[in-house]
Amino acid sequence: MITGGVGGANTKTGLAYEGKVDLKTFLSQQSGYRVDGSIVFYHDEEVAQIFKKHELYSQFLSPRGIDWKKCISSQLLPDNGIYVIINNTVFIIEVKTQNTTGSVDEKLQTCDFKKKQYQKLFFPLNIEVQFTYILDDWFRQPKYKDVLDYIISVGCQYYFQYIPLQKLGLPVPPTA
Image 1 (tube, one colour):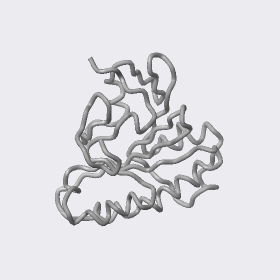
Image 2: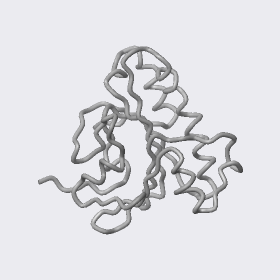
Image 3: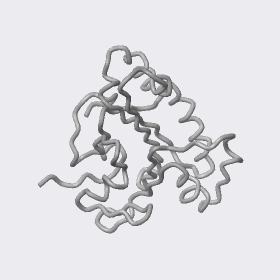
């Protein structure tokens, strides 16, 4: 996988895009990984915490004493989020699929604003934020070149149908 979203999927080293499979399910199926509630273990060592939608507030921010209303004016509800302990970074992962021109086209252009909002939300905890899209093949069309270039230019990322575990800073299980 090359930075910027070019390449193929490898389910041993990354999150394969499937609309019905979330990060928690994927990691639970990988060798050496175990997910207990929202906590991710690799060989029985805690490596991350997963959250999605409202779990960001109930399972991650509130227990750490963060009142989101003091940081941002409106709740953000991520498709998937993962706090990786070793690099003190939260990765917000938004999954976008499309099969006809529509509102998702314009939503891709909001990554800079959303990343900045998440940065405000995690600032009191001194946690870094990365914002990443997992896109389906619809977005490989030439008409998306400018918006994909924009995503990279504002410090966000995208991958087609896949995100490498290594990019998240998570251990990569050895291949058999």
